Length: 270
Ligand code: KIV
Ligand code: NA
Image (cartoon, rainbow, N blue to C red; front, side, top):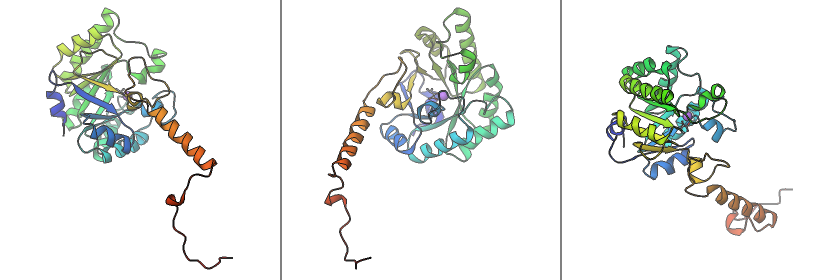
């Protein structure tokens, strides 16, 4: 049962596995597979709720999914992603929103898309007992600022800025750092510079761990980013099962006798 302390100490040892999950059955499968960290990502917005971005995701919405995942996970560390503007605007609100994921929904840590505005907040949360996973590089909640999802840290100044922010968040007490969509050599240098583990997505092979969106990993997504990999074909499996169901009902081969309740001795009802 990894704790935030186990994860922090795993930097440089065995690679850390992390996947997202948004519902109880998926979380149970991920947990049974021995994945160390289950992230209830705000990617739930695009992945499960039909939004185009993560911007519309709410604290109440996240709480709903975090509760479902926490109830299904026995071993993995459950991390709740804090949605757009639920942190970093007002300190009291930030702490209450994050605290709710631990107090009421069973998460053991939160993830904040990080920047200059989350250094003090990360320190305050750590002091209060809310473990923080930082997240630098591409931070999808900035989609409207970026105008898309461009790779980050591609010039010297931008790369140095990410490294500085990574060090500042480690100093502030973050227990790990997600690096998203940055050049592999930058991720490698940050991983070298930090004591806490880095967990990469589109950040090359040299991070201390890797994370993917579960729907992308199992091949359920209609589209997935080029840095992701499909390790299965769940979408095709589901489609084929559902096609078979439709055919069976239409051809009246389902339900058969074995799927039906036995007939009872009833008087004519009318
Ligand atoms: O929301 C999410 O799924 C994430 C991971 C991809 C890191 O933030
Ligand atoms: Na996220």
